[in-house]
Length: 303
Ligand SMILES: NC(=O)c1ccc[n+]([C@@H]2O[C@H](COP(=O)([O-])OP(=O)(O)OC[C@H]3O[C@@H](n4cnc5c(N)ncnc54)[C@H](OP(=O)(O)O)[C@@H]3O)[C@@H](O)[C@H]2O)c1
Image 1 (cartoon, rainbow, N blue to C red):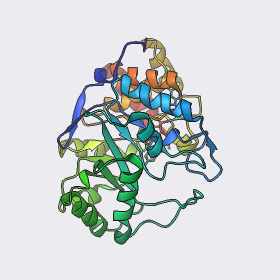
Image 2 (cartoon, protein in one colour; image 1 turned 60 degrees about the horizontal axis):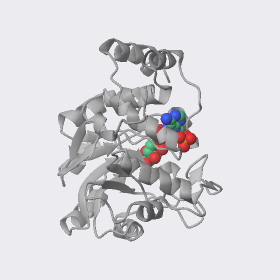
Image 3 (tube, rainbow, N blue to C red; image 1 turned 90 degrees about the vertical axis):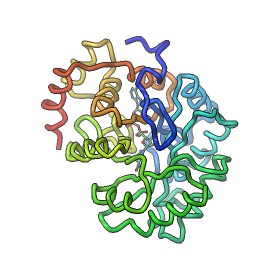
């Protein structure tokens, strides 16, 4: 499929609280480095390249960018790049960030933040992004324990006006119920994609039933996770891609969007051609038979 003139508007829209976004967004994790993300020896990406990708994303209609203060390499910070490339920010741009497990200045992971550290992490994002409030903050969680105390702190920051809307990341269904009893939740951001965590299918549907956006990550990278996409794909994905004149990555993005109108895509890339192609995937419509075939042959087959 041609990607020259297709903008993110082709993917349709979803409203996070009171903020309407195109369903194709952008994930900023790939920008600070080339190759593997979130490691201490990450290779810093060319700065102008990263800035160009961000500016082009917005030109292509992307108005939902996912980021975090812990997306950085030795020389680049995703939040600082976003600030430099895009501020003063367009009125319709929604920047979602996340707090949970910080990294020290060398890039090594620190323990998960306790309730008393969360305000500082929110303020770090405000400072780096150059904003007086954050549009969406996800509490990023590991494990199954209660999140009530930490989510309660973020709910207080929302009440105080530092945060407009709250979300959750890496959570289980019981976390969503626990959080919603404290404050409204606009999105859940979990690892999910074609052949990636099929055990999440019911949770994806449940989010839709509750009017909560589901924002999958690693929809292209899949099991490559922070190392990135492998460059190879299942024959079934390749066949569907060929039938549409599309790329396997576009089929993967389109498949996630077919899981429901509440599913928002945030593909990450540092490559301008991949960016245009990912945005164009919002116009790719798979048939019911194709989705069913991919579900049976790929989604429910992978470990
Ligand atoms: N909440 C969490 O715990 C969590 C965890 C991980 C990520 N995230 C968020 O989710 C976002 C998405 O994850 P991700 O960045 O890993 O994105 P992704 O969409 O799953 O995959 C990115 C990988 O695929 C490659 N790629 C992207 N577009 C491509 C295309 N059209 N053709 C071929 N290869 C392509 C990228 O390399 P190139 O740069 O070469 O294109 C990179 O290796 C992140 O940016 C981050 O914002 C959240």
